[in-house]
Amino acid sequence: MSYLPANDRYEKIPYKRCGRSGINLPIISLGLWHNFGGVDVFENGRKMVRRAFDLGITHFDLANNYGPPPGSAEETFGRILELDLKPYRDELIISSKAGYGMWEGPYGDFGSRKYIIASCDQSLKRLGLEYVDIFYHHRPDYDTPLEESMMALNQIVRSGKALYAGISNYPAERAAQAANIMRELGTPLLIHQPRYSMFDRWIEDGLLDVLENEGMGSIVFSPLEQGLLTNKYLNGIPEGSRAAKDWGFLQKETVENREAIEKVIQLNEIAKERNQSMAQMAISWVLRHKGVTTALIGASRVEQIEELVKVQDNLHFTEEELGRIEGILQNR
View 1: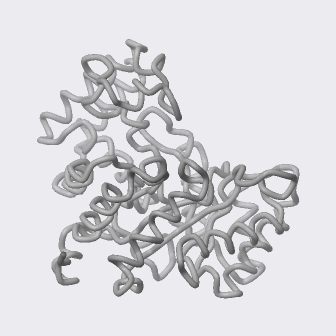
View 2 (view 1 turned 90 degrees about the vertical axis):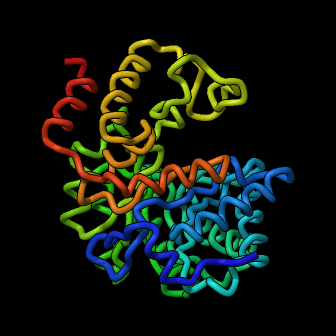
């Protein structure tokens, strides 16, 4: 087993500044979600992580409840770190989150100080780390004072359990409030992790402005709409695909929606003209915003990572291309 020299790795993929921080992130980050939980995924997950690292992807994103079962994705990545990447720890950005259901009882969910701090401690044990680089509150909790959730993140950073704090799934107004609280506490929020794609554009309605004003970066998840914005479903539902399994965020009825598929077929023609796959163009499209630091991808095979890293070959859009894409998305 060998790894590329650092200079060779970092020539493989561009990096962008994360807001007004000192952190640069690769434009593609790897999410370790459903394909990293359970006993049968370890060797494939190990191959993907090692290949991603050699391609210059240094940012690996997890959460306490990723699996299944919850916690198993962190355990899998912890084993990979110990076996393969431990000597390279200072070249990595490793993140985790807490905010969704993790254990039974009243203290294993949402946004209390008790839950967030206990979750961070548990994540560190599963990962075998003394600290993570970024720890997020995974979703807003309107039944817990925002100050309480942010004070928990502040304590985690000040205790050395995380180097930076982030939020995920926060709408614009709530994100601005969170950023203000954290700034007053002396631990500015580094990053926001929202969902964003050609088919889910809610962050354009205010959140990107908040991030720019607050100096926060962003890592957008589901830029491929769980695989819908790829070539995979243009001719039906392949056996073994996410839609065929009918679990998670991509349901069969979504893929069987002819209006959505017709849009993807038209978008794919533009991608071909750009010498890109549909997936590559979808990633390029979310990265066109200066407020989007990095696109978070999931993968089940090494080849998928290799394909998406090639997005760097064409990150620019002409005004004519953007107009055609907008016309398709708006059904004009």
